[in-house]
Amino acid sequence: MVPVAGIYIHIPFCSQFCNYCDFYSTTMLGKRDGFTEALVAEIVVRSVSFIQKGFKVGTVYIGGGTPSVLSAGQLGRILESVLSRYPVSVSEVAPPASDSVSLMASPEITVELNPDDVSLGYARDLFSLGFNRVSLGVQSFNDAHLSWMNRRHNSAKALEAFGNLRKAGFRNISIDLIFGFESLSTEEWRRNIELAIELSPEHLSCYQLGIEKGTKLYRSYMDGSYDPMPDEGSNSQYALLQELLSQAGYVQYEVSSFCKPGFESRHNSSYWDFTPYFGFGPSAHTFDGVCREWNDKGINKYILGWGQGIRGFKSELLSLRDHLNEFIMLSLRTVKGMETLELSRLLDNYAGSSDSAQTTPQIAEFKTNLHTLLEQRHLHQTPTHIQIPPHNLFLSDTLIRTLIVASLG
Ligand SMILES: C[S@@+](CC[C@H](N)C(=O)[O-])C[C@H]1O[C@@H](n2cnc3c(N)ncnc32)[C@H](O)[C@@H]1O
Ligand code: SF4
Image 1 (tube, rainbow, N blue to C red):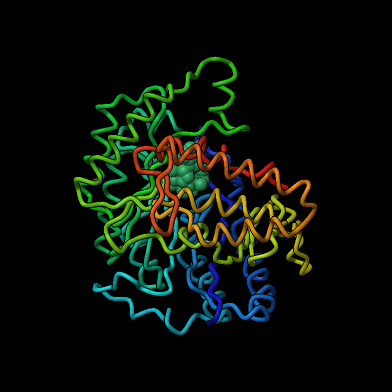
Image 2 (cartoon, rainbow, N blue to C red):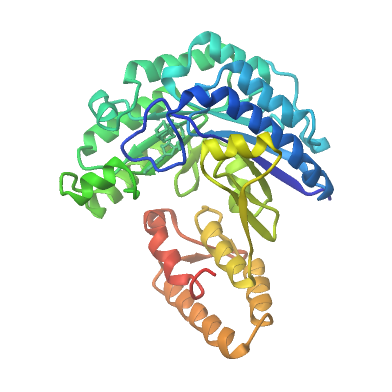
């Protein structure tokens, strides 16, 4: 079988920074043209290695940052540079863009959009370029919360953007929402979820607000002007989310991901099941199944480097222990869970990989912890998988931490 790989393209621009976000991005929008040239150069040069490895493209995801600060022409040029040079898996050939885009329109081609950029004309242009899935950063339908987050849009704009995407023909729309912050009451969160359900997106990504170093939110937390919501509050907002979305016919397939049946994000799912991916743009990661690479951050360095055909990046070979740990961390985030056969295989590989004086006690400790979590019903076992039951998914980080085999290399 031909190995399928995902393509991730990082657009490192934002018009302004949200108070919580630490994704690599710059507000130097004057660099957009130079960046697009450099990005296309990277995509072209690295196609050789992609083809040599025998990969075919299964999914393309343009994320950021804010891809929608680029013109439709620039996004089209970037997408074309991929589709014209990278082989697409034969079974993944896209049906012609039409109103009846199938559930499995292939390859899945997603672009992240900020609501304030989505005019009807822009949405139509993106649809005709071949994008068949969009991820819209709504975050909240509450104007006071949006302004606290330092978002550029308000609730009315988010509704208008969603309507424009539908009018343009998009039949696979995801929206992002954030919960679990100090000023969000349960009733306000309920209202957000109800409004989202009224829109009827095919997919929702709902994140608990994280306090990331280097952000304005982190500084407010450190100086005492922001009190995070206690875990019990966030947990009950998460439970409400699960309950209302399930009543509305959505299925949960990962800690933060919900969809109408058949609309799982194929691109995101590929991260959780170890499908290889190639990442382009500053800070983007690449994983070919064995080795992980990450491009340097820094827009100026990126543009200068690719002006001379030089890629700035670092890499590491995944050890067998890293591989085992990543498998545990990624698969347990999914509702399907961790396949026990694959777990046994990875444990055997690790056991045989180095000094048994080191691996034997580590594996024994892992098995004891796993057994305890199963006995305490924090985890659930099916004939083929070990899963975190839905009511415990909010605690997934803590549960997964208990199972990590020593520290990641
Ligand atoms: C990096 S952003 C890119 C999407 C787009 N620029 C936007 O803002 O709508 C992807 C998503 O990550 C989520 N996100 C980023 N930082 C977060 C944080 N600290 N806590 C929770 N969610 C976060 C937001 O929901 C955001 O929509
Ligand atoms: S959430 Fe989106 S718009 Fe806000 S800073 Fe992050 S990437 Fe930029």
